[in-house]
Length: 186
Ligand code: GRF
Image (cartoon, rainbow, N blue to C red):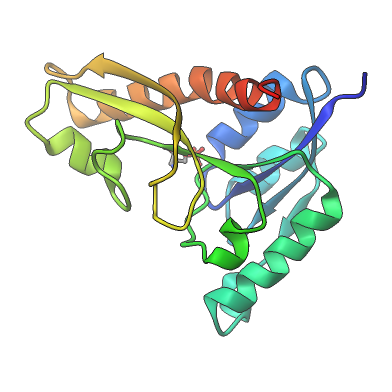
């Protein structure tokens, strides 16, 4: 049976992008491409080093979110993927995207807590004893879709740098598992 296809969207460092390609590409899925809105994203080199082509779609070249999303949807649909995976893709998406594209996202908090920007900082600074991560379906409400997988850990004695490293470590284990869970669930 042929492997299912995914495309990965990212905006920055791309450690999750790199990890997903290393763990899954050509073994459990085909990563048929990656797309970034940021021409300076560090992840571009990471993907290309691993043999995955990157399309740069600079949001600054579009005069509305809808125009950007229309082009993004067109590119994704041409790739004929089974799933779109958002790995640090820092764009608010309109219904043009969310109504047409089946996508999942990783978020550095225990949703439904700390939705939206700076979740990592807000989660760290909160009085909660635990921090965590969530993988969820992408819907129009930011970080509001159905939760697919979560993990939490005790953060009571951590400084911010340790907390950040712990988040990434968990993300790099959970996210590939969540991608496979979604792809094999029907
Ligand atoms: C991750 O912490 C993820 O939870 C959030 O953006 C960050 C991306 O990091 N959505 P990286 O680019 O994968 O290193």
